[in-house]
Length: 115
Length: 115
Image (cartoon, rainbow over the protein chains, first blue to last red):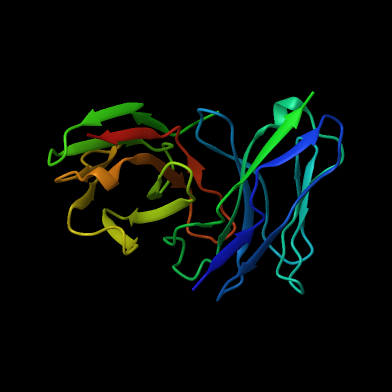
């Protein structure tokens, strides 16, 4: 079955540091890949997505590139801010269920940015 | 911007009681989902719903769970006889279409506490 593996946290960085959160996946189909973010006390918000190989999703300074050859979708940001402190979830949708399939999530990475 | 809403935000119940969690998906969306997140763990898919019937369900979604779209706007999750291990955050999501590239939009969640 499908699975998503992401680095476990917490990851603690200083403000303006570079960020990489690793995510690799296993899927039976040709998945779409997503990063969701969960701020403290809130629900899941879509951060970015990529739907085919070599696509780059980007939003709010975050980027992730769909790498089919390495089955990866690492999240990166060049300079993090305190407001980026949150839990980040990598997820995939393989589309094999005709749209009815649920997302498969990784365990989440808790990011803590210190001033 | 349209959003998914959920009520209540927090539900406390006694073990063995029935609870109904409510969701209002985005109005032109066709696919609806329920997920749960036990504290500190990853988000897990429960069930998807399309065209007034369950499309897919996970092994978590056993006979104590049911879903319904009682009218044109609400989407509900019923847990018939709650257990302590049902304590979790429950997220509703909706999606416009069945294409694998489409995004699922999540509500803010209902925190269920079973005592």
